[in-house]
Image (cartoon, rainbow, N blue to C red; front, side, top):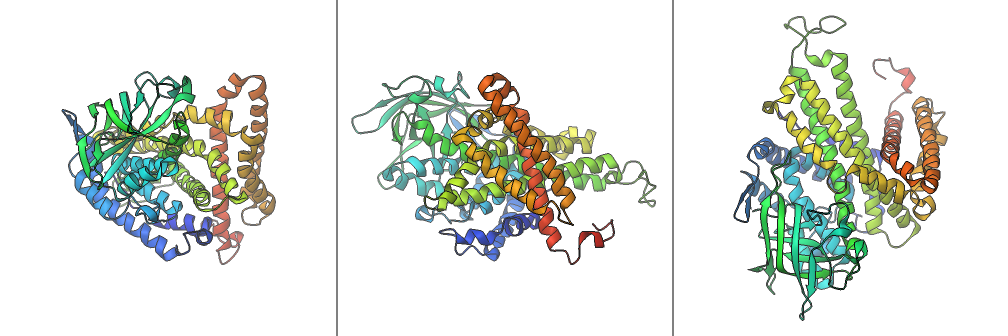
Length: 558
């Protein structure tokens, strides 16, 4: 059975006590974001998603999407759930109030996103892609395009996609062939084909707006010759309503290992009308706004799967009777003890929980930096936030999805044979989690980005945004009577990370192949140190709130 209750206490601890939500209210536009308001948002989100999205998850996986002559039908209940989703304003939490959004902080939006991914990852991809399109268009679109499309994205009546991949090019977008020919009226005609387009066709919204990478006739070769265009399924009328069908068609959907209720489409553009976003040949600059947002969101998908897999495994471990505790029967009145008494089961459960709690804390730390980046004027503090996000984006995407997949696999192991069959729903989480390690740039690509781009950028400035607070914390709390031992262990790991960083930086100059070969292990290393930093900081917050020092408590309570 798929079991999930939003971990609201853990979420409140992270946002208010660990990362101090009061600091958010110092940012422009967040002055009214009191703890009570933020808690109410989380409470209501938990109620809606648990009641509406979670019950659709297994059924949506079994039914999948159906393709019929260019039209995609989502599974039973998805249209009604989406209607409730947009009526509740859940797709507009962090969007700009100028376009109808609610202007809430990114930290709250990411926690809500975690709930969505835990309850129904396939469903979450539809509004998730729309928000990414909103961000790209808001950052680089003309005022005319923003005024036309952004309110529709925010209210959920229109959805968005990102159309990058072609059959012959995925990661290497410099090879793409889709063409855009300028027209006398300032529009463009696009021709070509795209594959693996999440939410590329469905029946949830009245219009679907594609952000498409294509080449102009005079484009230089490679990545520097790519432009970005907005291409709607239906051409908007002057009053903002949908008009004639554009030359865009879904020609098929993929039959996938997981996320089966999310339509992954093959899209054909046949002289489709589109409009340039940003400057000619600068499309990757605009698209990276969406891609980087989606990479953080994909990391959140890993966390969501990890949390629901953990909770489902705990429920099963408390109920499943097999064998007796090594220390003697814990429930002698029963024919056997529940498997949660067995050390290896507890090991797996605690591994899952530790990963989830660490990732949640790290994710909110990055989300707080997003708020500073988006809301502060040009300043050193804003630059620091930008640097930190740049460094942590590949780490969040790769580490969270690796650990989410690991948690789902541990969940199957805890269930035993019952986890391997469909009935209990645990095997779905393994299948759903697997794609998160692949799309939006494989985790290997994230590691190469971290080592090849983020580390050397600005003479290592981005790395200092992480290293400095860790080093300062270790120096300040190494002798703390409550957490000193934990801090010293963090210090050893941090020291090893510093040595590895220096070694890789040196190898990057002399032998880039060797540095690249170590990049995946290095990303895992920096990610685990970041999680360790979060865990020690959480321990410090908790220790400070105890009525007496830790050593005053019996060991069973410490």
